[in-house]
Length: 319
Ligand code: NAD
Ligand code: UDP
Image 1 (cartoon, rainbow, N blue to C red):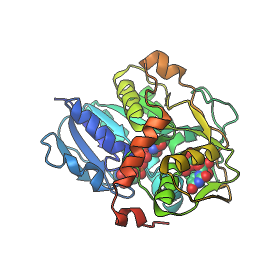
Image 2: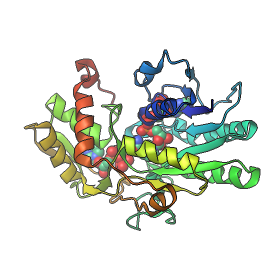
Image 3: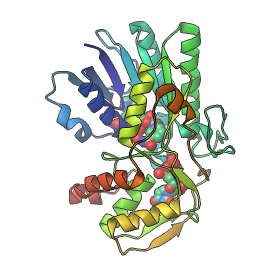
Image 4: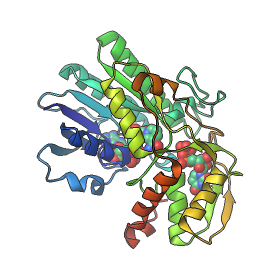
């Protein structure tokens, strides 16, 4: 039985990865320090004999007994309000955490995949973004703690690949959504749906003409699974190229939820990228991957999930 270590396993994406790898017949070691995650996301896996959970901060030294075939490093605060609240931990998990895990991969002769991000492109001057684009990041801006941690993460991963021969994979993830996102993490989809469910006005930042391209979680997980098992060590974008302005997205959520609340406009956060759309030619040609779930379908499933949350979860205010 192949053994996989998944960091950030109690988070949104990590928990879906645990489900997928268990389904594929792996032994899953889930690691998380719960700084932004929630054990509820993996509660259903508790009794599974092929699953174990370790509460550990991966920025500290990691001791792990037994063989390891794969490591998927997904631990990191991921939403702007999270990484603005805990900037030092964000920098540490991308740098020290990645270093620890690469050391572990080297010691165990395991293949390691890191969760990079479209944020390595910053506020992009090339559109859509191809993997060859170097990006436009302000290192000392508020988002710099996340963007630069991820850029360092890619650099040290390539260095371990080149100098130590560690087998590595780099996925650049574009905005992904689905069940188990935290309703109050400040990201745009849970923000709008949460506001609609609580009967609050929907907050569009700026004029709402900035764009994003939203990928449903199942599609992303499929792309990651294929990339891990491929022999391609350079970064690969995984995302859904269906681009939309934030204002139009807000209108879609209003229609979906049937809310009669209005749209209100707030200041655009500093360095908020104005446009974002993945070029997925590499994923198509190398992995034979492309997204299958369109936004209407994905949003419906996600809305059902948020509707099923308790009033306490719905009203929990974190910021
Ligand atoms: P999330 O906040 O739901 O999950 C992150 C998990 O990592 C949490 O459970 C948190 O407790 C854990 N964690 C953070 N620091 C840790 C540490 N030092 N030690 C151990 N665990 C730690 O976020 P997510 O959306 O699931 O994102 C997961 C990964 O994917 C992140 O690396 C993120 O940068 C990347 N990513 C996500 C998206 C997206 O759209 N969701 C886009 C690009 C990249
Ligand atoms: N956004 C918004 N209203 C909100 C939350 C976010 O208009 O209540 C905007 C935000 O300014 C950004 C886009 O939605 O332009 C996506 O934000 P998110 O935090 O989800 O992701 P990221 O900026 O990291 O892509």
